[in-house]
Length: 93
Image 1 (cartoon, rainbow, N blue to C red):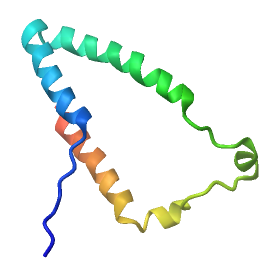
Image 2: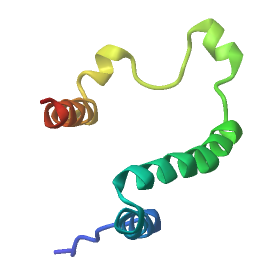
Image 3: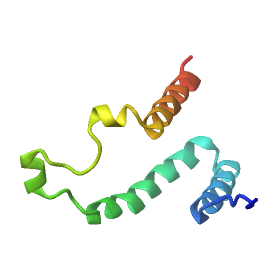
Image 4: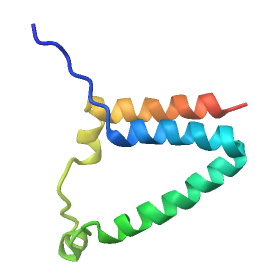
């Protein structure tokens, strides 16, 4: 029997400790403001360099991937849907 390996990204290790330091140093409001600014500085340039879907495939309607009816039959679709449902229920007052 193979042992399961858990993958933990370096971002998770860095992010959690940085957030802890920011919240304890400045409070949660300023920490979230700093995180929002950092997200804009880091992620907006990354999104600008991401590959776009070719226009020809958009115009012809032939995008690679699953159709909606095929996606409904996958575990990944339902897992993602229920995760968003549980997030919404957790935040609902």
